[in-house]
Length: 183
Image 1 (cartoon, rainbow, N blue to C red):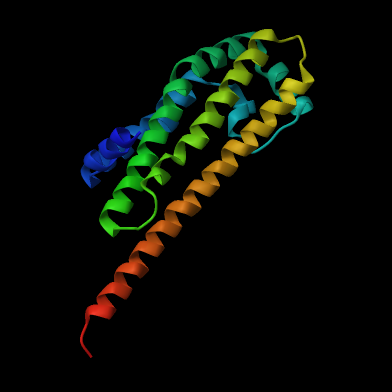
Image 2 (image 1 turned 90 degrees about the vertical axis):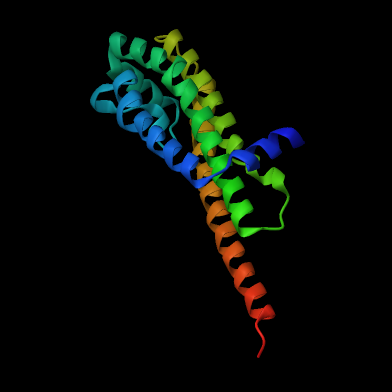
């Protein structure tokens, strides 16, 4: 694990992160809307939470063609997407820690992969539910809704953690400068 952490810290540079941010935009602006085209109803995984009633109403509204496209999208672009954004967020963490010399465990850079894990779990559950439609699996559908809510909550936690580490690092740097400045 230390080798992986060292790699993240070695490659974490602002230029790489900016390039990755531009590439990242391809996913939500082009790939996901074109591959996971769920019509006017919208995709399930963009909801914060849903229950089995909402899920099956949406699956019915999609129709066979959209359900098939949704499955393909979940197996392709939406498989790569979580891994990509998880790596991007881990690199952002590494850069913040590197630039601001924050004295926390370097393992904190893996926090974004919590969201990745829940996103991939959500995708797996949705693939199962989409492919088994019209058969209803209410417990699995409810579980998918909870996993989606946990995924979005994890994003909130990750964003708050990044903001906290940046503020902490800046304040820590200011305290060091103030402590080293003669009166």
